[in-house]
Image 1 (cartoon, rainbow, N blue to C red):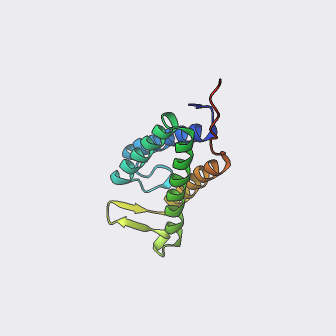
Image 2 (image 1 turned 180 degrees about the horizontal axis):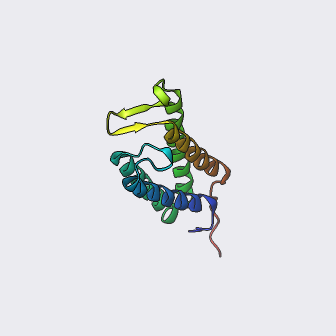
Image 3 (image 1 turned 120 degrees about the horizontal axis):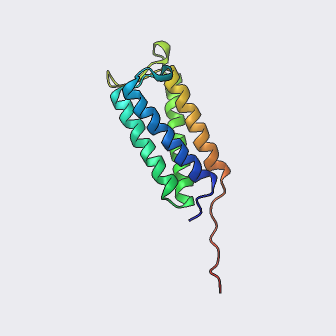
Length: 132
């Protein structure tokens, strides 16, 4: 497995960043203006762990697929938040437990754009014939 490629590095670094933000959210729930509830922090930790797994242990094709799906999920989450008509673009998924606001949407859009673009730019792995 070749780990010196952009999709694996992006998944690993992005996952580590999500884990750090998830942990910081327990200490400072208003970190960077985000609305980091306990459930939001757990979701960040889980998605970060998943991203790290795909960055370190998966094949290039699996990491690329992960980047596409993960980027699309976070991108759509960010877009839905900005389209919602709540005060200050508040988007409530679970009342009192998972409420997202403007900075959360912005971070989700950026995260989605980075993962989608990396998945898009990285060419699919091609099979090489075995050496004779």
